[in-house]
Amino acid sequence: MIHLLLAVIYLSFISLGLPDALLGSAWPSMYIAFGVPISYAGIISMIISAGTIISSLQSDRLTRRFGTGMVTAVSVAMTALALFGFSITNSFPLLCLWAIPYGLGAGSVDASLNNYVALHYASRHMSWLHCMWGLGASVGPYIMGYALTGGKGWHMGYRYIALLQIALTIILFFSLPLWKKRTGTTSETADEKKEKALTLKQIIAIPGAKAILITFFCYCAFEQTAGLWAGSYLVLFRGYTAEAAAEYAALFYIGITVGRAFSGFLTLKFNDVQMIRLGAAIILLGIITLLLPFDGIAAPAGLVLIGLGCAPVYPCIIHSTPVHFGADKSQAVIGVQMAFAYIGSSLTPPLFGLIANYIHIALLPVCLLLLLLLMTVMHELLLRNTKKPAA
Image (cartoon, rainbow, N blue to C red):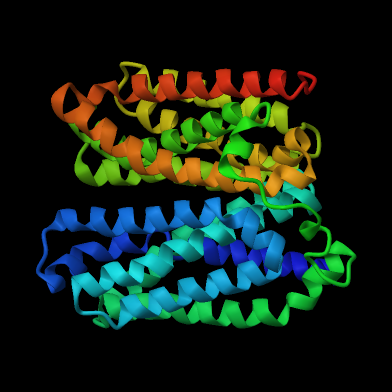
């Protein structure tokens, strides 16, 4: 039964990734259909991000009351409903309304599932599960592309993904007894209800909490900024063609996905702290490679290295959270971590856009280096504040 539940969780992580890149791949067709400026994609994205931040902050309270299984099932159902709403909408204001349950569903399931895996499974599963998220994020645009090239339009692309999410919702509701058995209680929430959910002020006051929140903020800001601006950096500063830059920029995400597959095996030998430090060192090597004044292989190789370095950082930070803060506080801390993650990934890429516009896009590696340094310093401070031995 435990293995069956793990299979359900793996399937859930693939499902988490499926919608993430849909808006970007569909928007060139959507904004024309809605008759709105192309920049309005930012409005949809910000609404989704706001909903995700709010639901992440509420994840501790929801999980203590309903349990991880129920929160996951209901959250995926909300996402499925929102995606189906996208598929039947021909009005931009209605699209904005459907974006609300889209974001609210995504935040709770992300925080709740990540904490559950951190508490109940080995670090290798966290890495492999986030690899599955990358698989879902890669497959989603292909499904949308199939709908667009097949003449079915972006509506059907969203509908295909919505149907997949509905199927997962059904599986999740049928799997609810498995979640109860895994926790070893008659009710999954029996142990979780013993203490009240922590307030945001209480969470931030926990020793080491500020350090881990800034660490997570910096990592997610780093990943999103690198992913969004790598292509433009290659074209505008390194002189690559747009076609070549698009292919090489994808190497960053390929590096993350492949790296997480390998990270799962490395965690058999190294602990979470060692994996995070190894990832940071590889990222640093990638940034240095990206800065090398050589045409051809240097920039693509740098992006691959940066992606490989990023691979273990996100899952290992999450997996180590119960170790640093205790199982009783981990859901609360992870919920706020997720909120900081979405804030970092939402605000930093546009901020670098201003830097690129008013100064120069050549500063991308420098900005990435500053984020990496702050992330590393905060992680070391976390270890000191939580009195964990330096591995």
